[in-house]
Structures are given as structure tokens and as C-alpha cells.
Amino acid sequence: MSHHHHHDPHHHSSEHNHDYSKANAEHFDKESKNQEMIKVGTELAQLSAPYILKYYKFDKETTEVLDFAAGWGLVSKQIIPYAKSILGVDVSQGMVDLYNETGKKEDFSGMKAVCADLKGEEGELDGQKFNVIICNMAYHHFEDVGKMTKILAGFLKPGGKLIVSDFRAGGGEVRKDFAHVIAAHGMAGDVIRDAFAGAGLTDIVIEDAFDYTLFERVLHIFFTVGSKA
Image (cartoon, rainbow, N blue to C red; front, side, top):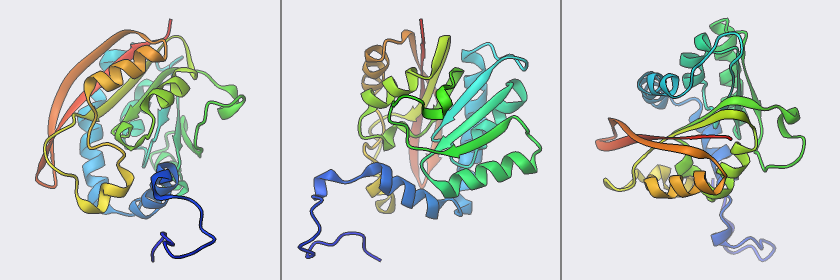
């Protein structure tokens, strides 16, 4: 089924206006049932959790977390034992449903997800603010990393931290069937650093964390962390 109507005279959206957010929602609704990617996501979550827990002093009584582009909730699942609550946010309703199923199944009452595409508008997420915002392996899906970082920083409490992981640019082509949802083939560290600085975050740390082999391609996973004054 093709979503591109090249010959339809009533179709005005041009190719370069490719809506990554919509493409991602559609792709991940489909992807949400993909067992192979769940296995990958689980491994990445297990490897990532110790880094996340190192960058902020989590407190079971007080730490409120936003997991942005939360997917199946695989990272949330690793982090919830150390936090008071985690709100998962994802553009894919399919993912959100599975996230909430995971939360129920594991009896993590502090874990719930909503389907939303954050635009930095007044009253989003009921105006909640968070101690920690995590975003794992999703920055390469965002068309405007600077804007997205500003939006996320707006949800941080003073002293809160934004913790982002992604893979470094370079290292071969992405599998063709993923190309339409990946705005960038990996992220350059300085692009994320500039985005964090531009969002007013301070004490920015960039750390190379671990390597992960996906479809015969080695991904160099790194973390970027910044604090809200």
C-alpha cells in the first residue's frame, strides 16, 4: 500500500515536507508487533539503564520521570524500580498500548503511557514537570533536534536532567526498510551538545557508553546529559 500519490492532482504536500512524525507513528504502529526489535530494544534497555541511573540520584519516593519516545516501555521497565513514577510518551498508539500492557503485566503501578506528539504548547501533559527526562535511541528520528530539546527542557523541574542516548553518525547505511523514518543516520555529538546548550541546559556531559551490533552494523551508543538551572 503506497502512501505517496505522485499523480494525484489534489495532493499538494511536496516530498520534502515528509512528515517524519506521521511516518514514525505509522511505522512504529506496525513495528510494535516486531519480536526481533523487541529483543533488540530489551538488550539496549538493559545496557542503558546503569548509565541513566548514574546520571541522576534517583529516589523511589520523589523522582518523577518522563520517558519520551518510550516505545514498548523497555527502558521504563528497567528504571521504574528506582523512581516514584514514569510517564511514557510516544507518537504511536500501538506502542503506547503495549507500554501500558507491560506496566500492567509487571504490576508497575507507577508506569503509564499516553499517545502525544509534543509541540511545546501550553498545557501539554497537563502542565506536569519532571525530575528526569529520558529519550533513548530516538533523536535520530527527529527532524529538528534543537526544537525537540527545547520542548523537552520545558518539561524539566529546576535541577532536573535530560538524559539522551543515541548512536554516533557513521558506520554504514541503515537498512533500507528503516530509511523513511530516520531523519539522520546516527547523531553527531556536537549536534546534540549544541541542541542542549541552545535549550539553556548546563553541565552538559557527553559520554561514549557501549557498542551494539544491529543487523551486522556496529552502533556506537553515546549519552548526552544536561541540567536545568
